Image 1: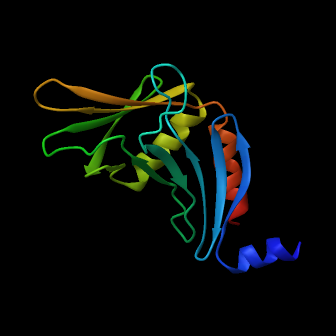
Image 2 (image 1 turned 135 degrees about the horizontal axis):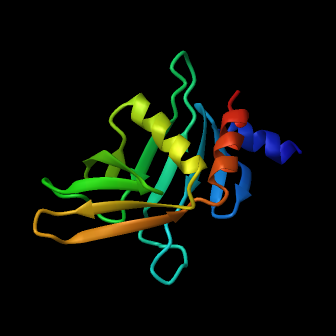
Length: 153
């Protein structure tokens, strides 16, 4: 118990729970909570190239979620990044190996789509026709998002 309290005071990250391939985490300094997952590779195992999807809980009057993706490789100028969730498609903005939704309305729509789908993919397409895809299973994502929201009330 004392060790746990010391870790919290030191600004450690605490797991709020894990559901399927999604986790909810809480950072104590500064206080922030988020749901996070890594993509799967073509064989269905965790892709270890460093990519992840994160849905952070925001405080304050807006309270829109912050949807963020670390890509498996940097996007180049001219590449287009598309997030596909079920039948819905969202254009993402990118800087190097980071991709994100342009505004709060889109971020809310993404979280709503996540709640009703089984998979999401982030596709980076270059003008020459090549593409890279990061695939995320969504089983457990709604529960992890809810846990993050409750963890930072």
